[in-house]
Length: 330
Image 1 (cartoon, rainbow, N blue to C red):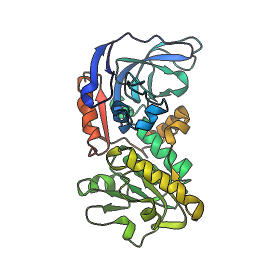
Image 2 (spheres, rainbow, N blue to C red; image 1 turned 135 degrees about the vertical axis):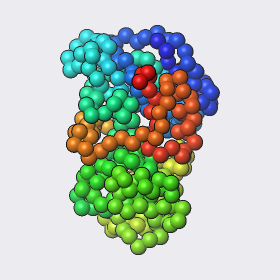
Image 3 (cartoon, one colour; image 1 turned 30 degrees about the vertical axis):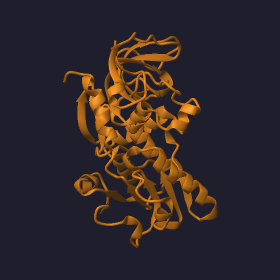
């Protein structure tokens, strides 16, 4: 089969199309023919070998990547099942959040992380959901403990996680303020934000409004600055940073954790994907999608042969919403 492999750390130029063996599903595994994938900062972090400390700890490889085939978001069709698999069968349409392997024609997936593809979505739309939507869901529901009627601010509301966070917060009964650039104001308002702050014209940390929860995806302000806009018992959840860089959001997260014991607010970092029950969260998201409460927003579509270009575009840090890769000629 064809797959995009990474044999060394570096720019998108190290992502090479190669012919590799088609995997065989083991016990409890499912072989899925991949019809669509999407690109996340997660992918280029591993491509670049960032953070370097993860190399030293054995997380992504020291000199060469442990992840040979990138891609965490996948939607496709079951091609074969391994022994003891009972919940799916060949021909079923599924989607999943993986550790690796989506930028390939086929991938083996544990049955436990697979969920039925939402019937109302195309494969490309479904592939836009897993990582970004699960990140938003856990940040709001589990870390932020969001309650109906609360006020939420999403800093970085026009990105992949942000567009899901705005919609999910509204679906959970919150009043949502989104922060984004001028060109994305209409987009953020269209997906349910009651108020939109254009960060090129105003500083949301200097206004008089207070929020029960701040989801910080953009990482453009310090934890101390964001604390100023929290209610006395509010929560601040760090998700990302400028252009998805690792060092800067990590600094915000460490600062938030350091401050937390000394203030009345909860200052948290969002280690979301590792803690997620992926299948259960995808089923929760599917229910909201089928109800019409949440919909993936896709900025650009790339062909399978254009995976390096898609990664390069996302790495630049200016993509609104999601970027998807289609393996289908349609």
